[in-house]
Image 1 (cartoon, rainbow, N blue to C red):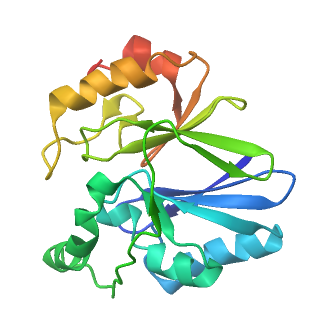
Image 2: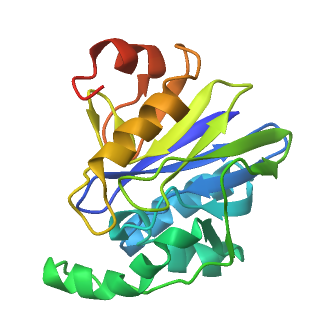
Length: 211
């Protein structure tokens, strides 16, 4: 499986396009907020001859869903996420206005729900959902056991963890989830984070000051 990263919006959020030799693809956390970012993602998908099969969200904070409306209409796939985060969608325009973002934002409601330990298939690839609440009530990670890839959203960062001071956050819940659900994965697992650089499970187990 191949992974292309796009850094989007003023929050420097990582949007991921995953695809394999079948040219089927998924988009994880489409944070594109303007036409330039939309076009950059679309041009890559067109150049690679990809067919977008799923639009996935690790969680539904506004910086991870700015592009869901565009992607859903462009590719005919509605976003999937955990139901516990659904309340955050309707809050997005208000939060964007409060932050003074100079962009028009559109809400896009979910096309379905993802629960813990589900399998998402595209091409010859599979992603397993791992529910790790604490950053948001419904934070999901997507794990490809064959490749050793974990798409962690804002649950786990290089040397840090997700914020827990936002609505629905809980520090103890997040730490417990990371330790019991993520640090049990193989050390060599590559962690693709919602912001900033990638890391590995082994590196975070040894050096992350929160863990």
